[in-house]
Length: 261
Image 1 (cartoon, rainbow, N blue to C red):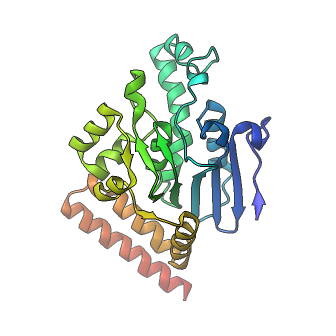
Image 2: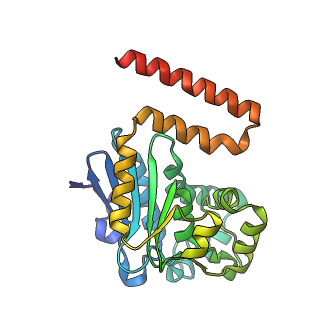
C-alpha cells in the first residue's frame, strides 16, 4: 500500500484528507476526527487533487471518515471567518465569480460520479450537510446502525450546492427530497435503508466494505463501467432510449470480449 501526496504545499495532516492506494483500490479518508471531520476549502482542494492524480488502473474508491463520524459538514469556524472562502467573502464577489468559486468546490465532490470507477462511502456516525453530499456523490453508501444523515444547509439559510440534490431526488423522489432539505432533520440508518439512501446497514463496516469492494473487483471491468453508465443515465432516457442504450452497450461488450480472446 502506498500513501499519496497531499495538495501542493499542504502535508496530508494539514489538508485534512488522507489518500491511500492499494493496487486497484484507493481509499480517501477525511482526517480531522477532533472536529468530526468538519470540511474546509483546503480539504476540498485536496479531494480535487486526488481526482487528478488517481492512477488509471484504480477501479474502486472508498471514502470514509476517521474517528466516530463520517463528517459533521462545513467547518463553521471557516464559514464564519474572514478567509477568502468565508460566506462573507463569497457574498462580496460578483454573481459570476461566486458561481465560479462554488463550481470549484463542487468539483471536489462530483468526480466521484466518474463512470470509470465505482465509489463507496463508508459511513459511521454523522454525515451532515457537506458530509451527506459527499456520501451522495458516491455510487453506494454502506452505513453502521448509528449513522445519521442530515441536509442541514437550510439551518444556515443556505441551499445544498455540492452536487447532492439530483442524487437525493433520484433516490427518494422529489417530495421526500424536499422534506429532507427543508427540515434539515436527522435521518437514522434504518430509515435511510428503508427510503433508499443506504445500500446496506451493517454491524461491521470495514468487513462489509471489503466484501463489496472484492465483489466489484471480481467483475469484468468493462462490464462494470457499462453497467454504471447504463444505470446512471436511465432516469434521463425514455424506455426506447434505454433499450437502445442497452443494445449499444452489449454490442460493445461482445466486440471487446471477442477481441480479448
